[in-house]
Image 1 (cartoon, rainbow, N blue to C red):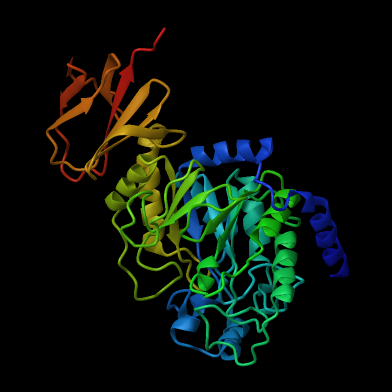
Image 2: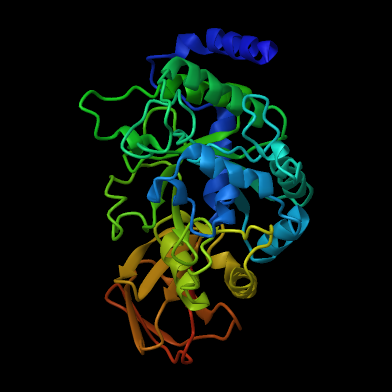
Amino acid sequence: MKKIYLFIALLFCSIQVSFGQTYQPTQEILQAREKFNDYRFGIFLHWGIYSMFAQGEWYMTNKQLDCEEYAKVANAFYPHQFNANEWVEAIKEAGARYICFTSRHHDGFSMWDTQASDYNIMNTPFKRDVIKELADACHNQDLALHLYYSHIDWTRPDYPRGRTGQRTCKNLQPDWNNYYRFMNEQLTELLTNYGKIGAIWFDGWWDHDEDSIPFDWQLDKQYALIHQLQPSCLVGNNHHQTPFEGEDIQIFERDVPGENKAGLSGQSISRLPLETCQTMNGMWGYKVEDQNYKSTNELIRLLARTAGKGANLLLNIGPQPDGQLPETALNRLSEIGQWLKLHGESIYGTDAGEFKQGEDIVTTKKDNLVYVHILTDSIKEVKIPMKDKVKNLYKLDDKSVIQYKQKDDTLTFSTNIPSGTADQVIVIELKKKK
């Protein structure tokens, strides 16, 4: 442990010259941002000992449970059906390009073999390093791995309490310096012992957003530590604000960028790569009674609307306490994957299109191709402003040619969309400019 503390201290010394300066992303970060921006589809996995209660990841503070009583469930945590390779295979088959996994959520339980705290998965009957197995599976199957990390902790006495977790810990002894060292020691482990990590996904800044005196999270030093440990590791923070210095991803919780229907994502849209995180049903963590899964059509349309904003969709699943992904979630993954096999080129590596018609039509583009996503079967005719000359127009799934008219900078074509179609993609091939 002393070696880790020394390592962190040396890193801080080596990067302290950058503090107070404008963040200048390195070439590695710029390349990683571009690669991330092409992914367009990832899977979020909220899994921890909270799954044992089957009431979602906020169960401890929602019920104001004593953290020591809550922690006793770790003594029974034995997810005997967990198989990292099966998870990754199903997620990759769905067409996702990356996974974001909760390494440590707000309940403070660490899902890896951390030396910074005894409150971790190695001290359960399971005694297996979940992140190690997941990292190996991702690396073997060429799927990027991102790690969620909570800035807050409802169990540690040294965490300075904000507006959540007020009654979960009896013997509070706030010590920000100690807690900050603890977090950075854990981040050092995650970015040292598990191979290439695509991004660190922070959450919890909002716990102190109502403080009369602004709380100093010391994010600049922490972000610099991450970039120093892994020069191509991106940093994102789910703080619901316009991105801070040192961040590489802008996150929108439960909202397509610019919509703010959930009331959590009213921030202005930056020039950073964008990501929308959304649940497949209603909860992030496993809740046994939450069977309100969005239909496959809804999820495909959400993916298209997100891509139409130039953003990635990070779609969440809450694994069961036995370590399996819920059957309904697996079915949704399979069906999304089947759609992407035919329509993936209209999603992956695309930019936001210029044309949008409510939630019925969105567009994406790539090179000289414009993809028109028609998200309802009720539309019979489409009119799109189009100054560039059209070379060809066809359906993406079967490549059948569509007749069109282009007059007065407007492209017009008729549609006959089968009932129940999630997303009819029409490709506009433009003549390349000389």
